[in-house]
Image (cartoon, rainbow, N blue to C red):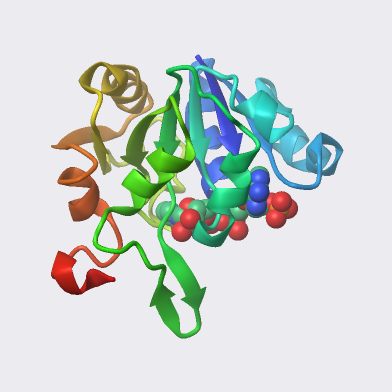
Length: 195
Ligand SMILES: NC(=O)c1ccc[n+]([C@@H]2O[C@H](COP(=O)([O-])OP(=O)(O)OC[C@H]3O[C@@H](n4cnc5c(N)ncnc54)[C@H](OP(=O)(O)O)[C@@H]3O)[C@@H](O)[C@H]2O)c1
């Protein structure tokens, strides 16, 4: 499977390290161009490549792995997803110190991502696990639970299969509106007061 990443930071590199040993190919991207990722790609090893965000968005499964404040700009350059799978790994952090959450006006952050990615089958995944919890890439790594949510049942299947293959336990929480809310930062808040 070819997995594209819009973003090339901690999330993109951590997921890449999990899938590469199973023969999958990854393409990472950022705002500075593929040449800026030469060292990252070299360290990831065979199967890893760098590309533009548009090239990454052409892969079989695409992971959105940018900060919340960059999501709109990152998705703006991809006008039509043509039914491809977009995995939203973002958390709606507006600022870290102090921690403030981005305004989503009572919706879920992944529904907003879906609006920004016309034609994409959006699945929320990876966001609720700090990457430092899954930085064991050995064959004997702990079988960590990863939650997934999305409105297209069929689209979840390849992601579910990928997660199970590389050693995670995938748990489907339902739609973006219901499961996405359970998964997202601030899920304990009353939606009416969530902002
Ligand atoms: N770190 C974690 O443990 C963790 C866990 C779960 C979820 N998350 C969430 O996952 C997302 C990514 O987190 P991270 O820790 O990987 O962040 P990060 O290390 O800061 O990486 C963000 C990446 O996005 C790239 N980027 C920024 N704007 C872009 C754009 N317009 N187009 C393409 N690439 C762009 C950045 O590259 P340039 O700035 O060089 O372009 C960088 O490679 C965040 O929403 C975070 O809340 C993080």
